[in-house]
Image (spheres, rainbow, N blue to C red):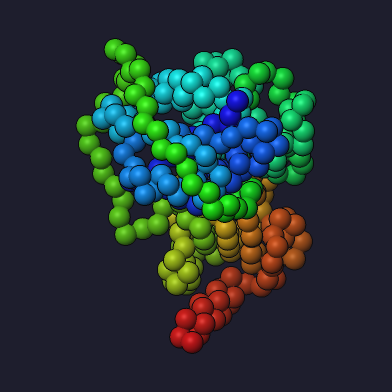
Length: 323
């Protein structure tokens, strides 16, 4: 029996979210008296794979194949299912990102497994298997009972602390069966955005809302983000008005993010917006309305006009960096 965790890589490197998943899987394995097997698909050097052992992976199954250099949902599902069956996995863990959300339903059908999507807590019990997740746009919690022999979990980002245990890991290469017609995606061209932090990857995000009053007032917010090495974002009304590009729109109908630190500048905190950012580890809100809903979700709040607060924040960061 094992706990299988699919570890996504970005250009051959793992990110914080990967180590968070392996740390989570190691505790689930401890609770179920099993071991952690990490599955890596793609070209990742052994030195990078060995890092997974520090967080509890006793074995890393590495699958390399030119057909798998780009995500193909059907092919990746086939590979994960093959490894899950080979390792006799009782629990399969993926990240609750776009990749995990695409793969989990397919795996559910393939493995005849129940899904706990967006879980943010360790299982409350193993027998029966009960896990917790956010519900109603983060305003409540739901306990999910999964009765199938194999369980699939997608772990919400920033819901579990990274824990090192210093162990080593065994790296095993696996030749997955990729028959004719399994890989259907053909990538003809790749264009990567450079010089800008991707919103979904950022540890710090600075976001603005209608409280910024005008697109002409965005310069201090951008400067503040650059000083912090942060990505910039906005609420839906701002993108709808054309003040900022739609790719920066965060919320239930935009990008769902989970940075370590989220600044909500001039954002009131409508339910739809909070649904997309509620998994942030820390939220700092700036708003003129002391009763704005954003303050109920924030750990830190400033009641004030963004046009006056932002220059002071910029000045404070510059002073801190000068020391």
